[in-house]
Length: 182
Image (cartoon, rainbow, N blue to C red; front, side):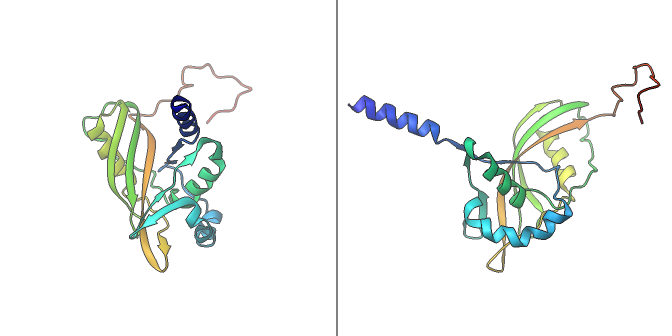
């Protein structure tokens, strides 16, 4: 009987596992959505965020509720402005790097407290940190205001960084008269 209870509990817990939404720092809100944030954020505050003592974090969502997680990500962890300029860290190799990190959006809408969790690819963790600092220096979020007070949000992020010179992948293809290219 005890084994059945433990087994049932294990099955129940495995189906109820939830994951924190991963935010993208390179996508920005369109102007229409940005203008409606003040309307929709208060309505979804209890649903999307866990808040206490002036700091919030996105709630974890089960895999079957991807649509709810996507709405929360759109409203609370999508920047209003993303700079398209970054400085390649000194000594970094050219290539692709997947960077997983945590960060905080402060009450002014700026990214603070970057912390690299994992860096896989051309850059190491230190180079990835410098890259993200350069990339997010001018990134701006719409500040979160709760009861008239600015509140910070702790978020998890993932970014795929490409460093090095751009090369046209089609440069070796023969020109075709029926294909238009830039």
